[in-house]
Length: 85
Image (tube, rainbow, N blue to C red; front, side, top):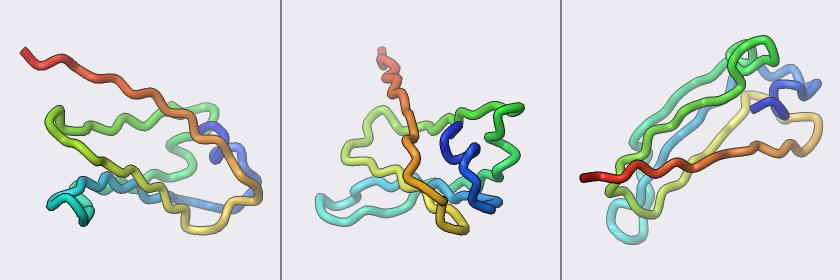
């Protein structure tokens, strides 16, 4: 989130939603988190951990800012899969 945190837009918070496809066609929000700009500032921790169930398939992660950003920003991510025993 270092890109959006450094954007000159006056955003104060963004809403992150985790959606899972429940019936093969429709997504439902199963988790929601509101993150403030100060939470991801360069002096804070710019990463946001998101836990997804190991058995979940067809997931969506959406990010919505309270105001539009001034420019397109790349949001880097890393997917870590934990092996179930």
